[in-house]
Image (cartoon, rainbow, N blue to C red; front, side, top):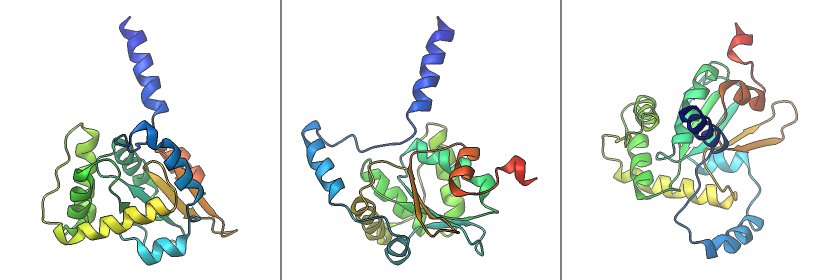
Length: 200
């Protein structure tokens, strides 16, 4: 029986790879669908001009990957860990949004305001994966407006869940998007990068 319960829980955890705003009432679903049809096409130039986040990885890489994330989302934390082996091949820009609750905005702002945003985010995402609150120290009051603007762009693009990944195919220039976390090998395939074992 215990093995069966574990298998069911494991299967459920693998199916659910993204976080959505659960505060919206069911009656709002039609409005959400309507807003998605009115959304703006995802645009890398718009992200570069309007969004602000934490940059990790190879600064000179031809491949830039944008990740809209909510600091309260455990799937975003899982993607943060999965992306680590790929940071030598790409530049990742992690863009905090407020999708789940008010704490998301406070923590996203604190990460952006940290003296070392990469270290602050790494500590925070590790805590989230360990089922902790992931408190980020520091005063991010001035950065709350940045998180609000990031969230407005996220909503304008019509994304429904976090993490939301955006990149551009280096050969065709086509925009590639994906909502939800991925293991490292699948993330590498989506981004056109070498999986860590193949890179060695």
